[in-house]
Length: 117
Image (cartoon, rainbow, N blue to C red; front, side, top):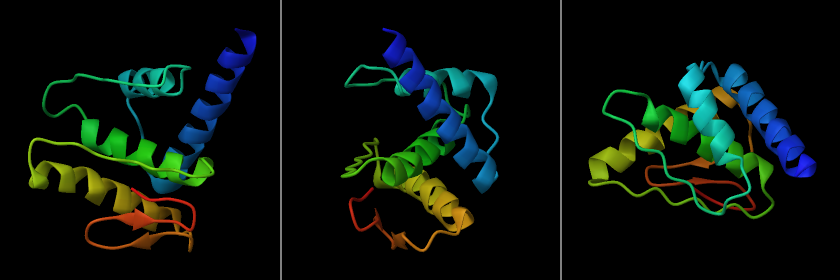
């Protein structure tokens, strides 16, 4: 159990460093959600009302996953194409702000050599 907690804390620190680099300041409740995201569970669900920064948080988590996992595959589901594009735009903005050359950003996806969003 101690290893899981240490791994969660390490992942959360890494995520917060990325957020700082790209200029995203998560609210305390978003940090708690990110901490749960880095837990040992295979699946993750967060329900929040409109206007609470879900898209920005998921965009940041997606970029973090792209750069920290060896073979990342990220799928975003939304009620409409327009809603999904909001998450994509946040992720693309974070990737651009990170100023890494490893991202190939186009209209529908963000790719690295190892994986995609």
